[in-house]
Length: 450
Image (tube, rainbow, N blue to C red; front, side, top):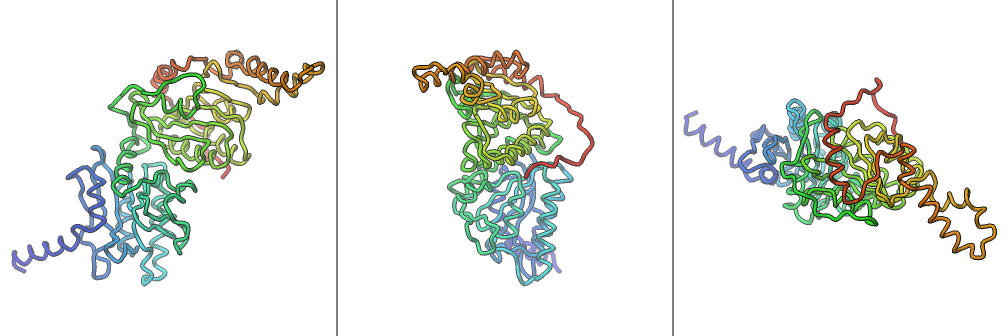
């Protein structure tokens, strides 16, 4: 073949695989000019592979990614596509870099028969093997159904555009993005594809490259929130975070637990806040987030204003997540911290490194209503106004028996701080815990309640 013919063949091959949907999306994900594609000219049958894949940088940090080409056979998964995706996971493992999968596919290429199960299984094995080793983000920008949805859901975070679909049902039922968010399957739902890609980039910037790496914030903006008595745990968590750094996750799932990644001074931290009664969804949401943070040595800050659990199984799961985590753990009691809630999220049962409380917090083995009824009920024997006096008795019990100073006297908390002192105290403790190392008993893993 002449040189001219070879150049023409190369040009034709480039044109065939240029400007596919997948390539455009990867170019948008990566820093400008940093994307290098792998296996660009690989074929699936007589056409190009239904996915683009490669590596580049996001905010200057290496990332590996693949994106399904929905404009090539609907992005249907073939053996060639599966091999390309598995190669991305292998390269990410070898180089200790995050993986982003961009999903937009009508499903599997059914003509390939039983081999399709092997292809799906290979990808599933790769993503699960890398869990806790490098961060993984699934970016759903179109249909993602059946086995593909199961693979996507194995990532640490699922980010969806509003018009995308995610469902295990091969028929596509209940796949709307907002439904996936309400089920706790999608951490973020954005109105447009561009916003979803930007959200994935923002998440990557807050995460370490792998489980041996660390991440910090170059921009140590002061917090803009106001810390004062009477605010919710969520508001306290927001107030201590660097201005503009907080990214809430899974907002539509488990409303009693607030989870977010945020900058606290120069440190990237996981923030959890509990308000009110903790239902099963809230415990599941918080437990998985804590386990993610622990896998990547991200400090966990817990803000507590909750009085009880609803589900024993879910409460045990949350307790296990805290107890097993060896990353730095700091708890701030801003309001109610009764009994099992205190034990699971802030006390020695949570294996917390440092626990502080605000002056008006209530730290008690029993809810004041219960404690007053069981222990002080005799004080109402001669009351002329039992209803009014009971309210006063409950308030007195909370003030006396639930006093944070009394809890500090028992060694249940390290200190009592004014709300406005909280951020400075957190910065100091985080700095002191930055080199924390823990030796654990030899075992494969906890048998966590699931």
